[in-house]
Amino acid sequence: MLSLGFVVVCRPDPSVLRAAACGAVALLALATGRRRSLIPALATAVLLLVLYDPWLARSYGFLLSVVATGALLTLAPRWSAGLRRRGVPPRLAEALGAAAAAQALCAPIVAVLSARVSLVAVPCNLIAEFAIAPATVLGFAALAAAPMGMPVAKALAWCAHWPAEWIATVARTGAALPGAGVDWPGSWAGAALLVVVTLIVLLVGRRLLRHPWWCGVCGLLLALAVVQPPPLTRVITGWPPPGWRLVMCDVGQGDALVLAAGEGAGVVVDAGPDPQLVDHCLRSLGITRVPLVVLTHFHADHVAGLPGVLRKRAVGAIETTGFEEPADQAAFVRRLAAARRIPVTRAAAGHQRRTGELSWQVVWPPPSPPPVPAPPPGARPQALPAHPEPEGPNDASVAMLVRSAGLSLLLLGDLEPPAQRALARSPAAEALESVDVLKVAHHGSAYQDPGLIRRAAPRLALISCGEDNMYGHPAPGTVAALRAGGAAVLRTDRDGALAVVGGGGALEVARD
Image (cartoon, rainbow, N blue to C red):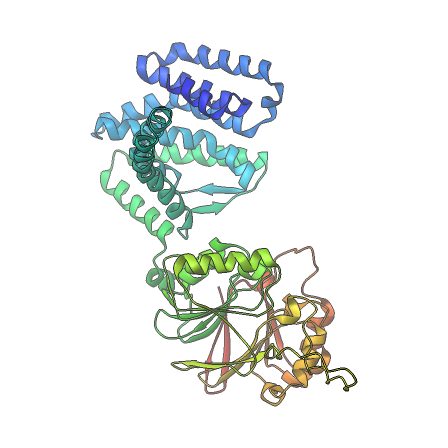
């Protein structure tokens, strides 16, 4: 009845029929205990579904459903029985056996799809399992009650949202852990390699089960590898280095920087394209408070990762450019800020702030000029403002001159040559001379103003770009020009995350 209700509610699409058929076979096996005789039933269900829709034979979702159901019918009973023989409580043994069996057989297929292997799938499934039954029963009860009494249906749906939210929270929390997964070759050869590794782990695991103390040690080591607590990570890896002033996160083709603002605090400049990547960077730095998030402009490779910055952190304010294009990304930022009640302000040249040893001033864009009234008939037209409206989001990027522990850092966002030339002629130009660190504009693209590079004359130039990106960033000519000016050039696509360490004129760089 449950599978039939699932089909009725979700409509009999091929994917729904596939899930319902495999689920019905698994439920029948659990209810009757006759798992062996249900293998032919599973084969018959698969055959009928493929005859109904031959394209299912090419569907990874169909393959995963069949393999998972087969694992529940074959491996899971044996594994749960083995666990019970070793003293594991029956209910826990059955749940652990089912989750582990499904993961063991499905992981190679998932690796082909995502080029990644999860280390948290089994524990997350175990934790989420307690909420599946209440969410399902209450959800169907809400559907059944809706035609007769909508208030009752709403009450049931409200009750169902708690277990459903628990499942979603478990999934999000597990995926956000630093060691939640490991990269893996995304090919069938990689799948075959994972099968071999899985067999080795199973053989070793059978021996370890005879030694509870070793099981505990291995479990603790795995937990530490998944959680990666920052103090332990710092001791083992040396990251982040003591006394770091700026970190350029490795977020692929995008920008995300962190300026040290005290113990556990950092000013974040841009959020990159991926919430997971920027969240991982901030957690590795131990950042729990963000006094200010500066979004230089609204391109997705600078703002799409904002949910990762906001995740479980106290954020004081968000500062943006006044040029709100692309409009959908600007609206996205404002929705997130409104949901968290975070004030949003506009940056303009001349604004200055300080927190501890960190201070900065905005050097671009210039304040928007007041509207020019139309001249009366016969009068001479007024002069145009010195800085016309930018032609696009890049030229409206927020650029900042930062000072931290005696170091000067110039962050140029994605400024293009027209805005760079205007900046070199602006009132702030004199302060831009001979900086210690330059965040190169626009991921090191070929569009740079040589005059501004010569004026800045950085000792160190940092470029944030993605490995093998389609834009060819950074441009060889830009890198050559920076080196010709005496700068050491480092880039995230080759060097990973970069930390600037120094004070009193000394300057060092550490790589993650």
